[in-house]
Image 1 (cartoon, rainbow, N blue to C red):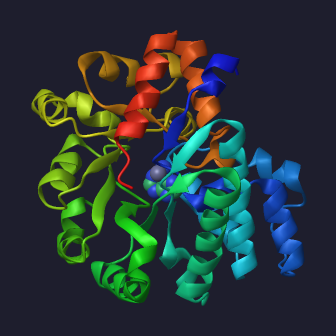
Image 2: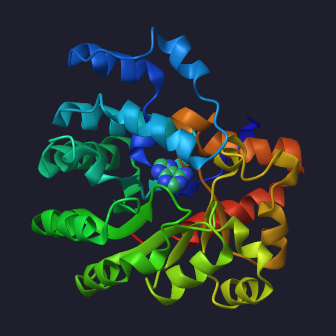
Length: 315
Ligand code: ADE
Ligand code: ZN
């Protein structure tokens, strides 16, 4: 990666902590917790990182998360991510975690949260990286389950800045979660949601109008709807775009076809993020580097993208 890109101060606003689980750590945690894995070794696992769509990735992502059992595991996962951030001059992070992925396996909510939170606090003290944690609901599960998760989170209200919505998008529109988002907002939590990754522009409208989100996660399909484009430009609603993720999950065929710079030039507040870096081939720095290499992103454009990420912080 060019040094001028690495040196830019950046914020990362779209990162699933479970998606930062590198195969080496996954195998180490499996050994520590005495869990048998379906892959022979790290190379075999890495070779399985070939996806035709979001669901194929999610199946592997949830299988990988099974090695996360103890508070120390969640600490180690988060700490490893923060160390990558430090090297790439990511000075602020607003990561997601999926409580239901863990509580549904019998891991107590507070075990997950304490490990993550302690690493974030240490990251602030020792690495100078500030943070705001986002609790994400799994949209392939019913809204009642999201309500239960929010209830479990409330004793730890001060640990979060907001709620998000992730997992399988198609067939699970934002309107299914209107009531639980209203409840979360009434607790003073910010709202964000994945929308317009694989799903249509209508899902972005719903996320804005019904969930009252402050930021759109992905949102690249907004470009199919001119009225929506005008709204997100007029209201300067940030998009947390994840270029390498979009290629790995076949949202675009090649990086040369990605629309992030076209959006930037049209005045959309787009930002660059890594989504699930262990699975998609890189962290924020590698995402910036790919835009430089394949789309001819200039230094001026990179600076605007980095500044957008700092401006779009919720914490
Ligand atoms: N969970 C982890 N990564 C995701 C993505 N890119 N889209 C939806 N849910 C996710
Ligand atoms: Zn995501």
